Length: 483
Image (cartoon, helix red, strand yellow):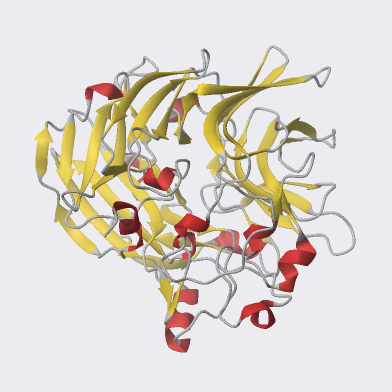
């Protein structure tokens, strides 16, 4: 078995397993829970699906009283139950068409997902989420409690925010819903929820385009920031001959970051990406001295998701000439003068990495460092820029645009997106946690790194009862967030 194909193995559940320490020492004072969400079951009945279209599995490692207790549960999704009963894929996915070719997918633009994209904590629950639904889980056992109240914003062709964020300024949860325009342009509606899921603010704006694909967001004191990855060629996608996200295009102005005023009806500010670039994730953003500063990760060219198809999955191809292997991801700093509108984007090719994490207490404020999943030495992966096959964790200096420290686990060890957990007042006085898969030993681990110098290697390593596929995203739940 090639190393890179191990991501297609479906994980097993675990219930309250104490993880053995197999190297180093558990840092004193590290208390809380590392959460991971990503694809678990990767088939619908007899139909294999693209890796990113699998049903969610959430895993949790709880650090308490000098030990680490592990849970891993498949999320009990209505879609999964329906497709098990039907024995087949019943809905079109972002990366997987229904069997039957063009006729089976013609006009089917409502996308179903397995809620395997993001995991966050709100209202006393862990929440697994994607664009067509968020689901509440018990914060200790990970048992599925049911749909989240945020789902009421969606329905039909509307796309929920896959990655809500807690706003450091209001303390509310910020999310959006994107509604495709039937006759006019697409619209985006930002909504804030308090800790009881009560709506506290709402802002609705036109995007001025059709076919927008939105992704990550964050909030500054005066703006909601959202990434527009690109534009879907809607007629081509609706024909059903290709999967929907193969119709993504980077025409001029298609990829941008939008800054939407949180109060009043001022103009939407636009931070365009360099030509033929796309972006998915925001590390952080803040406003200072009349400037809006946004740190993101960025790719030159369209990212190719085809290698994440399991062997034998048939699909239509992408638009001719639209894809090759893109370059990146790299750190990119955007600076926008709020008075003049002058914008500058600087791409730092000496700072590669994806899925950036900054200290939670610096969200919405000036920061210097971000920690990312980093390429490391290449293994047998078919592409070099898909972070599901990355081999290390890097500390990036966002002010100088360089890699300050890199832990490379080796070409046969895959390392997930990292999570930063503060441990003291200095910005890099923190721990960085990640899940790993050693393909040579066929072993999964949870590792803890010193955020100041990841290159020193893990300060603690814990063995998992079974390897996990790569995580889509991770987060940290403080002990006081438990009900």
